[in-house]
Image (tube, rainbow, N blue to C red; front, side, top):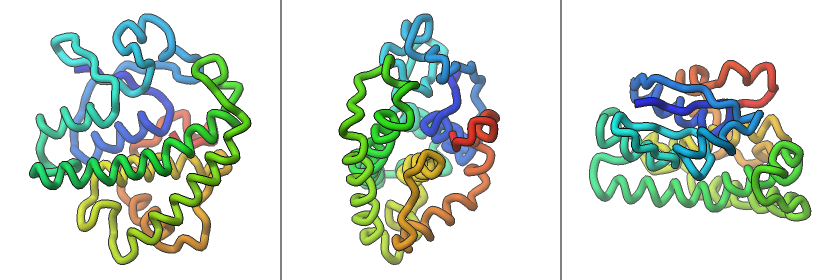
Length: 216
């Protein structure tokens, strides 16, 4: 197998997952900042152009982060980060999608259409006028999630999962591009510090993070 890796919050989430699992996979760097992921030969393997991607020994390429995680968890069941049963897997994916649809996609597009516009304007459709609204929606939904996680340590009750990895890597990145967690959201603040203290949070940072002054 070969992992296509780069700077960025989603590749960092992949590295954090691997660190939590104790899995080592050979990697091939792709320069996200130079848009190598949006042109051949990378797009011949992963037409979606996203990073990361996992190329299997048979040549098949999996280009969606959560799909890669599902595959790797089935091959490496412990420690459990998705779920050990059908019920646990469904619960994890329920919260994963709530996090993505309500928060992380709004944060990422708010960045792409504003601070990141020069980087992304020729890579994907960008709508600068809606960036402020997307950022407001993300903050409103963080407040919503703050209420839901009252009294628990993780996004999914009683279990550290991929939902925590997804949200943590997004919020750590967002703090460097002007989208911070409202200090009044005490549950979210405690949750973030808890995840930030995991060894995988440190080891997953890309070597370029300090130079770029962004957490990816």
